[in-house]
Image (cartoon, rainbow, N blue to C red):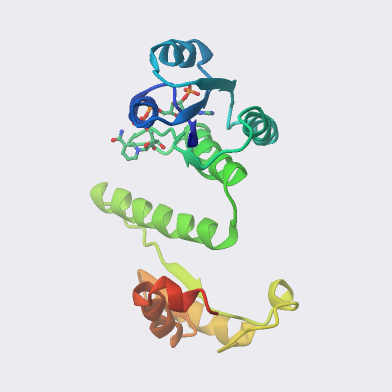
Length: 210
Ligand SMILES: NC(=O)c1ccc[n+]([C@@H]2O[C@H](COP(=O)([O-])OP(=O)(O)OC[C@H]3O[C@@H](n4cnc5c(N)ncnc54)[C@H](OP(=O)(O)O)[C@@H]3O)[C@@H](O)[C@H]2O)c1
């Protein structure tokens, strides 16, 4: 029998997924904080299931809980990282934003993997959200999203395969122009826009060769 773990299975989409997978014969691992809800769902599932407390606000404990659950289930075929939280509001309150970041970004990363590119994509989307918010509020604030390619700095000193590398001075000069010019986005150096565009359309099987 195939096995699936659903992280964040106590309500909404995660709960519904648990029911769909059980209907299709899967053994289910259910995780979340609201353990009573998980037990109620477990009682209604037709296939064997496991319940595990997991709080993504405590990523180290969450990793341990996931490992434990995988051991108890003697392996797993699919892991669905569904947990998420968020709030909408006119005012940016960091404490509320922090919970969303901790669960949706840090918590997700604890359950999955490579963080660097994804964390940068997060920044881009965050800046886009801020830009819309300021526009709606008619605030005279401009957001420039700087997307550097490779730049010689301590961060990249051990990288072996780099192309189109610029000096920090050249990068800084182009960043300055973009900010002063109130650009929404700027690739540094400019030619990286070509590669960014190519990466969006290139098929995975070609990308994975590099
Ligand atoms: N509903 C939508 O329209 C919509 C649209 C786009 C994306 N999504 C995404 O879809 C996913 C499911 O959302 P939903 O709409 O089904 O919402 P939901 O009913 O509120 O379910 C959220 C799930 O995340 C879990 N969760 C929240 N905080 C957690 C934490 N600290 N540790 C572990 N688990 C946590 C919750 O479990 P506990 O509270 O019991 O821990 C719950 O099982 C989320 O990632 C959400 O961002 C939803």
